[in-house]
Length: 278
Image (cartoon, rainbow, N blue to C red):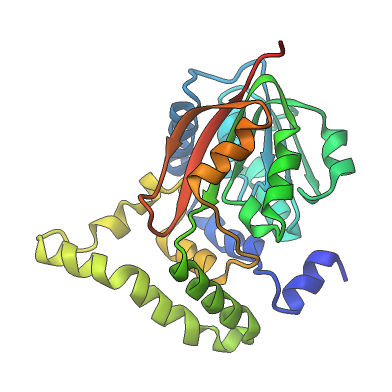
């Protein structure tokens, strides 16, 4: 049994890749176009031709595909074999036979593995490093893969204090249950996450609008798969924006763009540039 499978079997890790595989049937050109536009906007570029792009923790492979559509030479990897299978299927279905998209199974906590990948013009790791069980080590190792004046694009769960600790208990309870009983945690969590939004939108005369438009604002993810991902997501660590800024400033990075979740639930997103050598 692999390390990943052993951790999932013991309830220490959520099967993110299995969740992504259920999402694949919803991927179409519209969702891919949304991912391309989002990536282009965040990076502030028209295309990525002539650049190397690392997708560290590639999940469904949607963003890797978007980077390839923008012209990058793409390297994708994930610790979860099912995520690698998702990315492989994404490449086969939508990659048009590309030869500039490498995929492998590996850990973001493995320095030798990462070193062997080389350096990149863009390193992307959205919603991944806080699921490693060693977030700051993972961030340190990923940052080393950014070449001179390269870009680091990351998203990390926001530290909500007591609320984050309560969600950690929910996640542990979910993963400790057999699959047939996980609805006992999932459905109350779904209500907690969505009921207020449904009620407000209904009172304002546009019921369910956020649910219908979710894919346009969430990297193409479907709302239900995102709920499952959130509730199940172990390991789980959080950080405050100022911690991330200080950590990377000390390692020679300058903030280019940031979007926080306003102190609430979700990810704070950051784009950093490695400072040029002196």
